Structure formats: C-alpha cells, structure tokens
Image 1 (cartoon, one colour):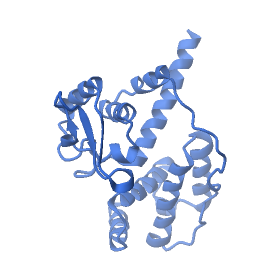
Image 2: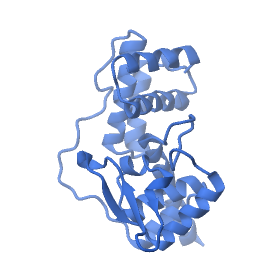
Image 3: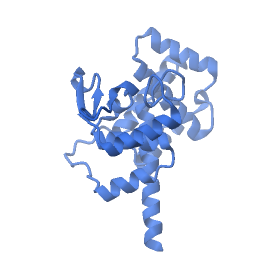
Image 4: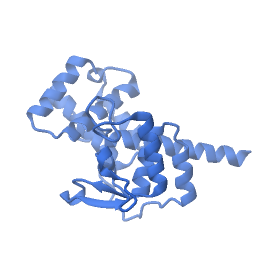
Length: 228
C-alpha cells in the first residue's frame, strides 16, 4: 500500500471515529493481503480476495474470528478508499455454530510451542499470555509499570480488561525473569510490547500470526524428532 493511499485510509477512519485498535487491525488486514500477492491492494481482484480467505481458513487454519477481522478491514478499504462495490463476505462462511470445546494443550505442548519461537519479544509476549492467563487484548496493552515485581505483591495490573474493570493477575518468578531479560534487551518505554510504528503497541492480528507460525514450527520440530 503506497503512503498516499495509507494516509487516505487512516484519515478516513479517523474522521469516522474508528478506534486506534480498529484502525491498526484494518491496516494490518489490508497489508497482509497485499503481502500475500506481492501486489498493491488496489489492483487485487475480488476473486483473488476470495482465494485469500480460502487460504487463511483451509491452509493456514486461521480462526474464524481472525479471518473476520481481516474481512472487515479489507471490505472497508475497498468500499471507502477505492470506491469499489465488493462482496460482503468474500466467500468467508458464517461463524461456526458448533459447541465443540477448544483443544487444551498439555504442559509439554505449550512448552514446545513457546520454545520454538526464536524472537525474544514474541516468545515473552506469548509466555506472558499463557503464564498470567491474559487475553490477547489485555497483553498487547500492557505497560512496563503494570509489572509489579515487589516480592510482597508479584502481580500484573490489567487496565481496562473485559468488562472495562481493572484487575490483577499473578506474576510468577519465572515469568518475571523472562520479562527482565526482555526489558534489558528491548528497553520498551510506553508500551511493554510496542508495535512497528513508534508510539503503538503490537496488534492482535500480529499476535495471531505469531501464534500460527509458532504452532506450525513446533509441529514441524515434533515431526522431525519422531523421524530421527
């Protein structure tokens, strides 16, 4: 996406009072589409977009909710920035109605998943989510001062979590050690896990992609171990 188009996209979203988190999610969705085809998003056809969502669901095995976030950003971009009439769903099926429980990973599987991540920032982010029992939306908004490491407390303060109520969750000594090593390496200032653009935090879409890549890598490593 060229800078003038991106600026027009951002200005339109600001004018219509979309939240900063929504803006970041929409921009990420369009950027990932363009990166997939290595092509300017304005030139990507409807059929290509439909095929992209098939790829996300069937090959990348992305959760429906994550695909819906991508869909919202992409349709918004084409309708309001490109003035293009597009399909409401681009082939994305309705939300699954089944009551199937989510798969629960064993401690060994979680450990393998987290240790497969080479990037320190990404690894510590996911460890924080798993160890402290945080939602992704809570973890990405953490600030350094939310980590209360006094031995008499050892908690993480979660501001504006679900239900708009602040809460505290336990900070383990192991996670504290990981966070200290991360802080010494990255020296984060405002956000504990900053985004690529200065002054922003990492987005939920980025976390979904990190988790997807980690799952794929951990499965690959497990298969290789079985072969040997």
